[in-house]
Length: 373
Image 1 (cartoon, rainbow, N blue to C red):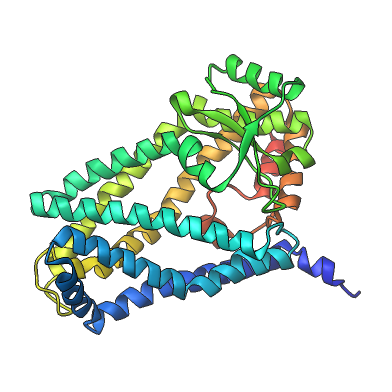
Image 2 (tube, rainbow, N blue to C red):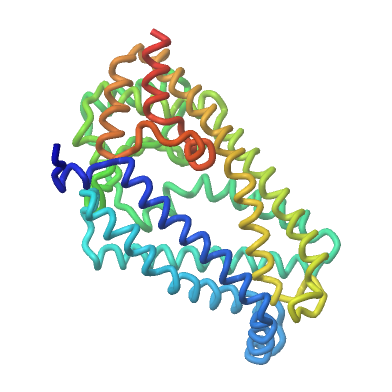
C-alpha cells in the first residue's frame, strides 16, 4: 500500500526521530566547541585579549567572555535551530510562523539568554573574588533564590516577551475553571488565553507562576480543538500539581541540582584550572569553557533522574484530575486530541522515554485511565 506525502509528514515517530537528531547534534556542538577552545589554548589567548580590552577587571572580563562566546555558539548552531524550529515544523504541518517571525523570536531568545548568562557569570566571579573557598556555597544560595524568583515572575515578565495574552472571556468555561480553583483552594489571579496560534498548531495549557502571580493559561489552539469538559480536566491536572505540592517539590529538586552543580564545578576548577594554558586560579575567566562542560555533564547525569521523578508527579496529577472531576472519558479524549495535534509519539522507545520525557507517554496515561475505571 502506498503512503501519501501528507501521511508521511504526519508520522509522529519519524518526527520524533528527526527532532531528536537535531537536538543531539546541537548538544554535540555545545560539547565539542568548548572542549576545542580549552585544548587548543584558545581560551587562554582570548582571555588575554579581553583582559587588555577591559583593563584587567575580572568580573567585566568574564561577562565579556561569556557574551562573546555565547553569541559565537548561537551563530554556529543557528542553521540547526532554524531547520529544527522552522523548516521541520513547516514540513510536518505544525508551523504557523513566517521566517521573519522565527527570526524575531530567535533574537528575543538570544537577548534573554545572553542577559541571564551575563548575570550568572558576573555573580560567580564576584563571589569568587569575595570568598574563593566558599564561593560555590554562596552561588548555590544566590542561584536558588533567583530560580524561585524567576518561577514567580515568569507569567508576568518572561512569557509576555515571547507571547501575547488576553483575559479569557466571561462565560461557562471561565466560571467552571474559577469555581474549580476555589473548590480546590488554589488561588488564581485569573484565566488567560495564551496566543500560540500565530506560531504553531500545537496546543498547551498551564497553571503558571505561584502565589499572587499564579494564573490559568490556555492556548488558543487548545480552545480550537478541545471542548469545555476536556479543558477543565486538563486544568484540573495542572491544579493537581499545586494541591499536591509538586511546585515546591520541583523547586527543592532544582535546588539540589544547583547545589551539586556548584560543588562539582568547584572541584573541577580546583583540579583542572592549571591546565590548558590557564593560570591555575579559580578566578581566571578562561576557565569558563571548563565550567560550561562540567555544567553540561551534571545536567546530562541529572536529566534521567529528574525526568523519572517528574513522570511520577505527572501520573499523580493525572489521577488527581480524574478523581476530582470524575471525567475519565474526557481525560482520555483530551490526551488523544493533544497527541494528535502536537504530533506526539504515543509509544516512544522505552530508553527515550526514560531519559528524555518529563511526562509519561500518552499510551501509558490513557492506559492507566482505562485500567483505573
